[in-house]
Length: 453
Image (tube, rainbow, N blue to C red; front, top):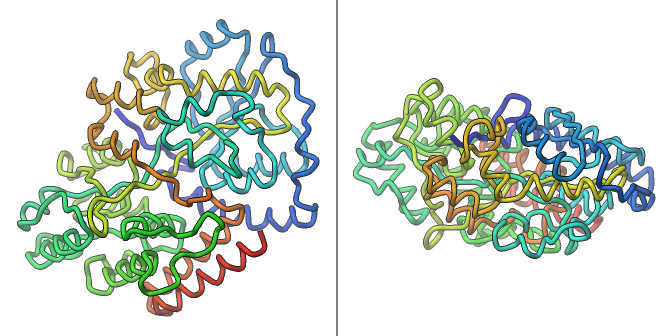
């Protein structure tokens, strides 16, 4: 069964981003005072030894089965010391060690939203220097989310992307297509569900001032046919005819017209999943997370809509839109003691056959606790073929066509930008700002940050 990633006790995309904004905004000040922090970190003096050494791997995850790690040691002579920290603490330790130019681990988490920052600061080795990243591109669609200035900062070890989920029973009762292809058709279906009293407020949008609101807007902007930032980080949403502006207006209008529950003004993404979508209070979440059907909505202990919620291709302006990526990766810090040994571990850890094992394809004894969806399409196909991935036939093409949130990769100033996004969108939802004012404020922030980068 597919498991959704969890950090600090909540589903992906919640508290980790809030802490990221707070922690890294402060970190930017420290780095500025230190002259940027990128210069001294480029030479680590790490050993090239790959046998008879012990490496430390730090991820926000339980380790693979002991037998799997023992097999890796037998094959390579490399022993793995696994460190499992909650996501927030892990990011703080990575940042603190890199800023102080000291060792923390040989391989660590690299989140998609930190790629631009890590690349600019020069804290991590380009993975292309150690593994054949070119050969991975076709089978690992989300590798593109880990590229900064043409260099791969980390290798995705799971797949995560934004999806649309619908309660097909509610859509069908309203006489609506349970898989609408356009936003207009989707909106009309929601209005029909409301008008027929199937549920009073059919759409879940997490309007709390938190990262989940930012990512919801990114996916909705893509659905309207545009992007948030261009490759240089310049805003693409500051005019009424832009996709980002239309997306924000659609979201705010949905709240004002009662498609979204009024209480959602203070609801986060995980709360909306657990208390609204999973309980049949709403009929759809336009920007949900891959994995929720198999790990939440399809579980009797946590859901009253088992078997009723499905993934659909995200409705777009003229037809189905691409799904935006938000995966986790693993990379090698410049201060690693054994970078070559770490690279061998990363190759093993992210390989197709290993991901299939971790996902439970070859039995429970090889399953990695809490492991989400594989990043390799070939591994996902194995899961789907064996019926081990709930919604696999829907998720597979979505993964294959998934795209990075930002054309040029997440900018180094992403935390400040995201803060501006969710703060101003929340204000527009409460009515303290108009959509026009919110878009101007977010655009001004992006322009200022891009010009200073």
